[in-house]
Image 1 (tube, rainbow, N blue to C red):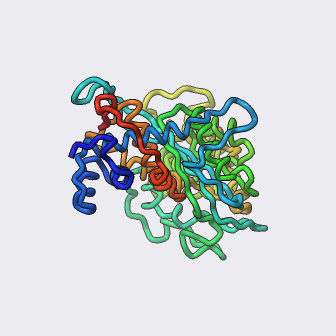
Image 2: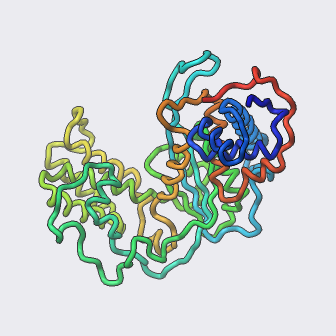
Image 3: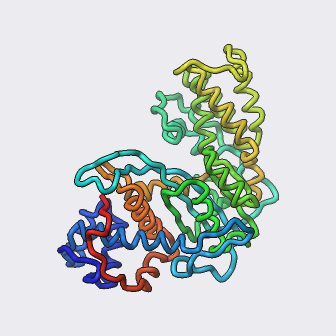
Length: 409
């Protein structure tokens, strides 16, 4: 059914947009609409309506672009409703994703194929409790399991190990599960995703945070990995939030370094456990010193360039990464303050966004088609019902000829 915008009722628009946001493709969305709702809507109509709504969401987001002043105008209340009270703990996380694009207006087929980076952020209202002493001083058992650590570090599975090697004995008082009660838990999540460059995306994040009253929170944290744009956004827009490097990214570098430092896995695993525990317990400087000393002993003084594919590169990378991020790795203090120390919720959000926008033979017109689907997907993933609320209050769009609407993949 080839419907144009004036023929689609508001209720049907809502069904179309949600089907497009929650399924893998416009084609699958069309199938769901017919089989579940009895609506015979073509995939091209699903794409056209979804793009129109996505671009409306982007325009509404950007309609009050802030001047570079100390004050920042809030996002339209049609998108975000401020909570009645500020959160006790506000957490902001951001990370990059990937999307494959094509040039628009080039006819059928794929022209100008390219991989582009997406910017993604989640803003979390979380449960909170502080502690006089570190509530989890021992390295969690998940980080002492060889198979799980290999998966986290995206390395090949380790060889079989004797039972006494995979983990060190639990310390007295160690939590009995991988989710001890001290860790803050998600209450409300809102999501952002865009093709924007870092500074513009930082403005979007700050507007969202202000509307969610995050700057009024008693405890505020900003988590990210080592990407420079993460910390440029923190420095410019969230400087009064406590900066925290995702512990799992640090673990990734430490594990790769240990494998490079030792030829026998059991010895490498013991070295990894020591360095990972030192990082967890706040002794990052000792780990950096150990890595740098090893490099000197193996013919690589500080500042010396390595040849391509040199096996010492993983050790040099770990020394550099930990040195650059040491000021964001005071994990015992963060735990006493009841703050999260991993960006697992951000990693999960990136996967949820990628589920819809990244796949085999999936290309999006650059930039309109890509930006539109990111807006729809992010709004659908928010816990505050913003997509449904917008669609319920959306003003009926005037008739627009199909030829004037850019097509999306």
